Length: 80
Image (cartoon, rainbow, N blue to C red; front, top):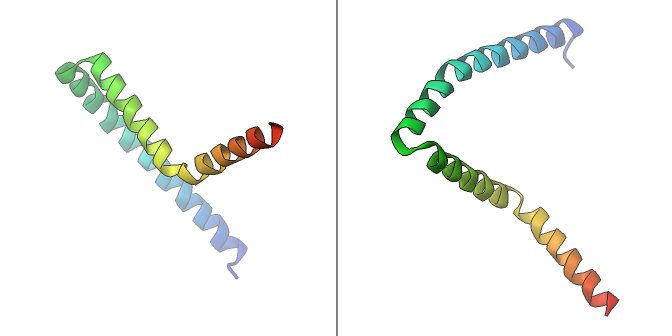
C-alpha cells in the first residue's frame, strides 16, 4: 500500500508530465496542421479528419453499437 507521500509525489509527477505533453502538443500540432492545410486544402483536410474520427469511433465502440442495434431490433419485433 503506497504511503500518502508517495501518492502526492505520483500525483505531482503525473500533473507535470501532462503539462509537458500539453506544451509539446501545442508546439507541434498547429504548424503541422497549417502545413497540411496549405498542402491539400482546408476542406479536404477537414473531410479526411472527420472520416478518420468516424472510422475510429466505429472501430472502438463496435460492441456498444451492436448491442444498441440488437436492442432496437428486439424492441421493434416485440411491438409488432
